[in-house]
Image 1: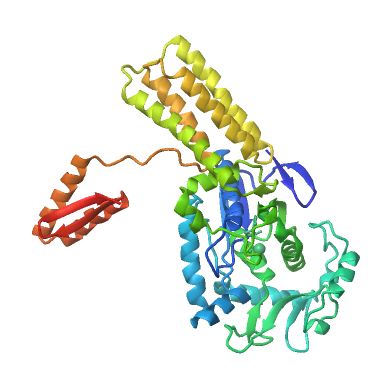
Image 2 (image 1 turned 30 degrees about the horizontal axis):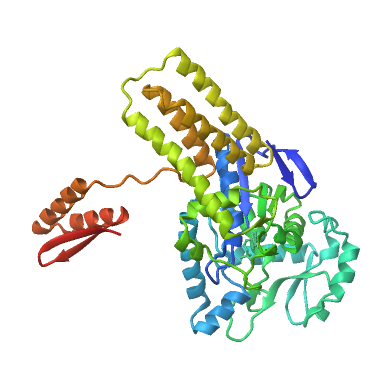
Length: 469
Ligand code: AMP
Ligand code: ZN
């Protein structure tokens, strides 16, 4: 498996630190609003990387944070007149709903910055002890960037070029720094803002320190993969490397993976430009698996332009795969014998090449665009080679290969089984009986189960009525 490493600027053979295991950290969203589909790109891409790694037999420990203390959260809280935690908790829940809709699996750990403050204070203390950090006049703590000799190695920037550039960008308080390149680790509280006690002053952490701390706590000092959108390469990831390597004296992450932007009219989609659609907006018009398909239809390091036309094309493509799957299921239900004949055995061997094509694409830096082509070739094959057969095992083997490939990409291609009317009537009867027997727990369970399948019950004077949601 070859992956493009931003650190070396080339594709490299993937070798984990520990045989059979992958430690992976993906920088997560700042939770002050519903996530937009630009934020969704790294979620979908790196969830797919995780799924593929697991398919290859690795045990993947996947950590992704929620940044739940930040200027934008504090601003939103002030506007609504609530505590910052009300805003962050609300949008963490909303983000999780969106992730579920996009079939992005929950991380092994989803740490929140506000719950890791002690670890941040510890790391900052160590950096001060090692003279990699210092306390300014107003008690802000800064990282001493120049002392970290490898600074710039990820973004391939020369530290002296940065110095000139940053000088022209001086903001208030910067004159307290020893060097314009130094960045904040801890800053003093401001009126009305959340704060924590620390050895330096009541205040809150800078943004970069949280990832260094959470990555170490949940994955260890050195990890295999650190990932995020390409806007994070500099300064966020560069600063994370500086903090972690200065503190731990070890390589922080071996492979750095970055997705390109999701654009709209060829400009980065972002909250600040106001040119965004939230995942929730999209979910009103499309099933979110269409969004997932759309994201994976391009290689993750290529910019991707959002348009209705491309989304409609993604919907049609996904429908074609779903159709292939449901045809196969229909054929299986109506098949009349188990075993395959010689000809079917040979065809099945040919069909195996789609898994090979798929793996070849994914082994080449997760080329999901080519992997999707392999899935289509598989669907085409199924449409041509399965109609005239009645062998259950042959059909089942074809179905399981197709479903396996779709599952690695996280594409949902199986229509939820529709509950038959008769089954619904039976369940309603059981619920009525349970209520008669005062077993309200069971009655509620049945109502919830039906609801989860899109069946809504109404208790009326004439008895229970139901409809599909
Ligand atoms: P943020 O909440 O801005 O820190 O972003 C969370 C993640 O979304 C980061 O990995 C960003 O790099 C990524 N991201 C934000 N906007 C876009 C975009 N338009 N295209 C791709 N990734 C993005
Ligand atoms: Zn980060």
